[in-house]
Image (cartoon, rainbow, N blue to C red):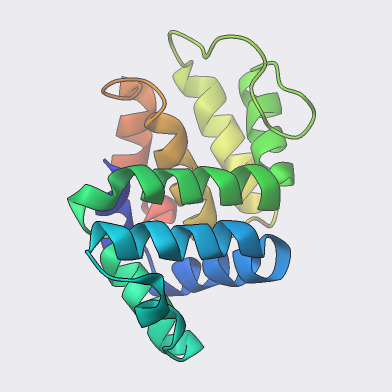
Length: 167
């Protein structure tokens, strides 16, 4: 699943949560995203900036669903997950036995293969540990984008586990 497909499938409340986080914690990324998305649509950023916040969010969410905006969409998801959801990322890496920097950023190479049993246990811990299952699903989809074609075990888990529905 590519990022534009993820934005099409995800609960809009999660996109709002992401945009709220950027506005509160990293306005430069928010402004840069608006400028880049506007440029991709052959618009000036002021066109978007003059809209109300709700209209800006709706426009951004709609624009991130366009294939041409895949790169910026993936970047936004990664930045939000890496900076705003470090506890969840670290818990997943711990559960999978993947070395990380304590904040969920993988140290070294990504694993070539994922152990299905460890994956099941790690996902159970995240979902039962209080993390929003929709956020867990978004993270796992993003993690799966890190290797061409994704990991078969993770792809199967995302397809089969009803707790990991995006919307």
